[in-house]
Amino acid sequence: HNVFHAEKGAEFGITSDGFFQLEALPKKCVVVGSGYIAVELAGVFHALGTDVTLLTRTEHILRVFEPLLGSTLMEHMASEGVKFEKNCTVASISKVAHWYEVTTTTNVKIKDVDCILFAVGRKPNVDIGLKETNVELDKTGHIKVDEYQNTTCPGVYALGDVCGKWLLTPVAIAAGRYLAERLFNNKPNLKLVYENIPTVIFSHPPIGTVGMTMAEAEAKYGAQKVKTYRSTFTPMYYSMTERKSKCVMMLVCAGAEEKVVGLHMIGDGCDEILQGFGVAIKMGATKAQFDDCVAIHPTSAEELVTLR
Image 1 (tube, one colour):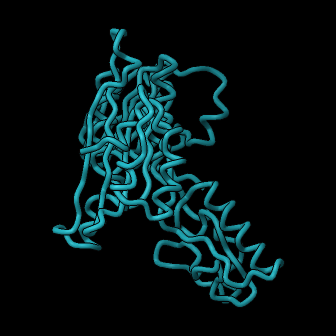
Image 2 (cartoon, helix red, strand yellow):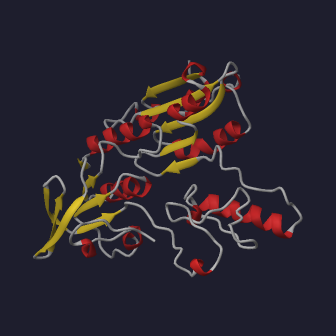
Image 3 (cartoon, helix red, strand yellow):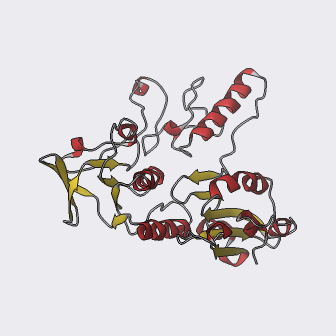
């Protein structure tokens, strides 16, 4: 379930569940958070004409991803008119006439707000009597499972967000299908491999990412064995328009063979581009194999096979 976070007045806010229950478009909205849901819904509100302010606990957004993605998105959102209040969260929310006044922990007051949306995380729904069983939870309150979705109680399985790993619907579906095949179709070794899972953040513009960040790759292989390739460009789509939106792409390669262990990109079309490259990376493609593929011109995707 979703989490509210405010020292006072949290009851005036909504979460992503409440977003889908809105009957009218807010004129002015404060979005609290810096992850997937926060930037996606802030983008939706802004695209529809709402005055949006995003409150972030640190200087950054999307902190668990390659830093290049969050910084590029923040720069774009700010240029489009989204406001940011950094290094803070909500101290209080008070109702003033028909509006709300939001006070941040840095004592900034945002007035005449008609929607406060909290996107600061979700807590696992584990209050279902597990204390009466041998099912154990980890330090974060998620259900402990092994690589085959077995809990610590024989014959009891868990999958999806409640396990605290890759909180994505397609991941839960895949894990469920593998578990069903293992239990009921005589495939005892079948399991979901939680590596190189492609994911998209449907921000404006969208972000696509799969594999390791540069920091993760350096921690695993050593900085001397990691090389990155990146490109920043304006897609040809915008060559004749006044409004511009740049695209940034980055490959993370490891070892002498330059195996592609990470791919990170932001820009129009990156959501659709990622799926096929996700297959290539899962199969262990190298930078040389990327380069050996003839580019499709003119596209943004061709940049990934022409990086130098």
